[in-house]
Image (tube, rainbow, N blue to C red; front, side, top):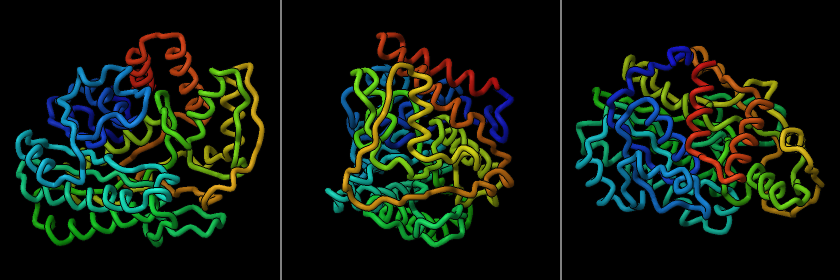
Length: 354
């Protein structure tokens, strides 16, 4: 385990770590990872957002002190934080889907903006929290579809309600940090992660879940935006980055900040390339390209991740080929009614041992 570059694994042993959004896809993986690191894991979230859900089929409830609640409910949230006294908070509770943001913009802003206000305000009223990481997105930047790599100092101005609400969440975090946390107390950072893939993602309007569903049903995979370039990465990459940030900024508060989290440049591929890799590892499935006339989404989105490499010595470990292979590995275990928690733990151990 000590081979994970940049991360102080011992820091999390015995720590009370609160994960908001713990019933979601990324939250479920993070709970298993923290349990593997022997943390005392707490969760605050709505009920699992999908059916099936990774949280349920992997029996995550058995390894986390779970509280079902809405991040928009300040009184409930702040009471839970006071009662449980977490030392680390990884904030992932969000409305995370671009298309849902178009259909439900008010709920998206309430969740992603006021949810951030609520948790930061709750931290102000608690003495226990020493490290807070707000997980936003690579879509916080103003994007004109130019061939460029976004850096942390670039303008924040997401186009659609989801992306824009996450831009606002960044600004809220920065304001609270400057106004209320300059004299010590909780160290605060944000993490702007690229597109995440991994076993157990059952969300709508995402390409890998669509690939898995089509493959299992014996249908062609439908691609609607084949040339759209995204910083795809396995779910374990950003999760280890969040933990690296959380532990590093406690050791040295000058390391708190805003960090892009994404793959190497060579692994920023377009959707058609991603699907072709999936087809290679799944076997016996093909794809076709169709337009969907959907709402605006950026065609090119790539991140410059040099800052987190330089300041925190963080490095991605699995390239895009390996990331997709691991998705297929997990999905075939699930398809055959195997032990999905076991394959999650195996992949975590493989990642830490490489």
